[in-house]
Amino acid sequence: MEEMRDASLDLLVELARPTSHDTVLDYAAGAGIAGFAVAPDVRTVEAADELPDMLEEGRRLAGELGLVNVAFSLVDLYALPYGTDAFSLVVCRNAFHLLPEPVAALAELLRVTSAGGRLVLMDPVVDDVTDKALNDIARLREPAHRRHYLEEQIDELVAQAGLQVTQRGRVRRTIDLDYWLQVAAVPAAKAGLIRGRFKALPVDVQARMDVAFADRLVSFSYDIVGLRLERA
Image (cartoon, rainbow, N blue to C red; front, top):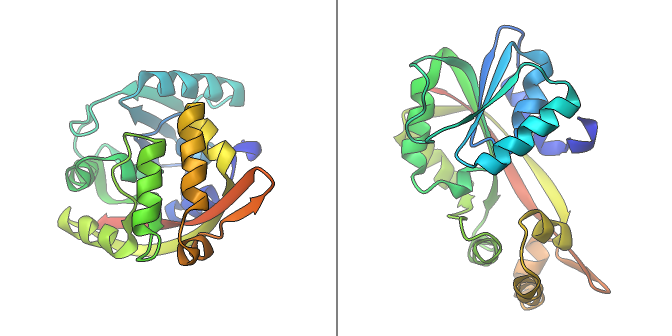
């Protein structure tokens, strides 16, 4: 598990404060990495997503890691097959920007979170300088991308869903551009286009994103916000 860990997972665990009594939903789980981070400290983890290939990869990884308390389910993210108050802890990492209807998704998560439970949301955020540039590049990289929000916009969506922020944190992530493109399986032609977009970014955007060029290598940074949410 350590080789998968990064600062955003440490922040997620800090905000979640998992206990041995927790039943956990990892929402829009992908391969289940967020659920894996809390699994050693909780009773059960249900990793739910609408992408069967990612769930299959998660099952493989969970087996390799010996995480016997993690299950994987193919679901409709807006009509979860769980009862009201089914989970004491819900985590959602690196998926909020993909959701077409974020308020509806949050409302469904509130439904399945028990009284006194908590929801931890982790996602990249932008600011006024990086908003258009990073979102344009992210859509080019991943057609399913909807929007990286400003932090205050996430707060507004959270409030619309009947939730409130009770704790927040932020980490800065620096990533190699080639790796970022590789994990999204970006074709070579489109990858070249995206590299060109980075070189063409305005100076103030490059500075805010810590864009660095070394021979053919490119790296950049962005902020990830973590929010602990509870019923308003």
